[in-house]
Amino acid sequence: MHGETDTDRLARANAIRRRTPPAHPAGAPRRALFRGPCGIGQTVSMAPRALITGITGQDGSYLAEFLLDKGYEVTGLHRRSSTVTFERISHLTDRLTLVSADLLDEASMLRVLRDHRPNEVYNLAAQSFVQTSFAQPVLTGEVTALGVTRLLDAILLVDPSIRFYQASSSEMFGKVAEVPQTEGTPFHPRSPYGVAKVYGHWITVNYRESYGLHASSGILFNHESPRRGLEFVTRKVTHSAAAIKRGMKKTVALGNLDAQRDWGYAPDYVRAMWLMTQQDAPGDYVVATGETHSVRELCQIAFDQVGLAWQDHVVVDEQFFRPAEVDLLIGNPARASGHLGWKPEVGFEELIRLMVDADVAALAKL
Image 1 (cartoon, one colour):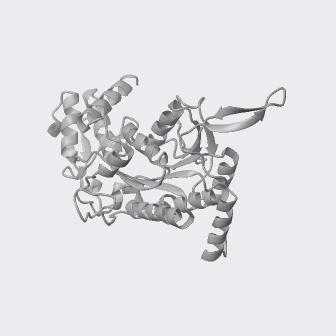
Image 2 (cartoon, helix red, strand yellow):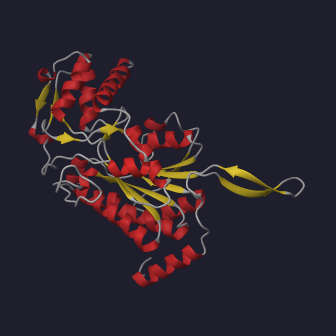
Image 3 (cartoon, helix red, strand yellow):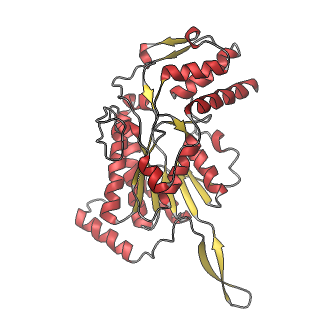
């Protein structure tokens, strides 16, 4: 609130927490008392409720599917925009509730939380394209950094028993201090996006420690799928390979072919998000495969899937080099494996081949 001191804020949060009933065990059925025809009290099961910001994105769509299949009532938050697309969730729209709100506007966050009363909130919304963050650093900070604070503060005001998941990123490591990276590796981001994610990560830790929120961060390394946007290098390559095979184009321009990433499969990673909110205590977890692959290797597998030699179609263009490249990003998922029982199920080569096949099938329908 405007003009509120830290002492005032803490007192307000503690007052809210004292009058808030304990949270239900996460993932367990909620029970409500209602009166039957004879006035006799009966209990009925109520489905757990989840709110997903960024539901129209890759991760949001897979997470919505995952939670709906587990019996959740899912509310998806999207920004009101003339360019918003529901393509990734078009097959789910009759199973979930979509609401318009904006991480730039805390009042809209308060309204959504009060109207829909979620038990779990998954914050996946962000300006998430690294290259764009260099051109729009202020917008990136407003959404990807301060948007987290607005949402956490709204949770604190409406219902501190809500379990919160923050989508952190391996881009926070940037100029890495050690290989592989763990939850304890120092951050040294190399892009405005990475800087904003560091803020979002630490403000989540701060609200957890200051106000007792069940707030967890997943430090997710790169995760891909056929629903990945075309601006991301994995999908750019797989889509281009499919298009070149069909004679729709001849080449694809890329940046640093030696850049290496720890790439996994997005549906595997949303499962880890949910597991974090089911724990008795909140925490931070690296979610990764523990393997690294280069853009060059990505090209080799993608073009091999359509029977082409990648060297004949890939050209290097310096405009796609980052102003500041990150170092070797490879995650150590030991904590997620040990505490959450999580492990990836789809390997890198299988992932790239299934993405190419999906692009080939999609282009064949044009």
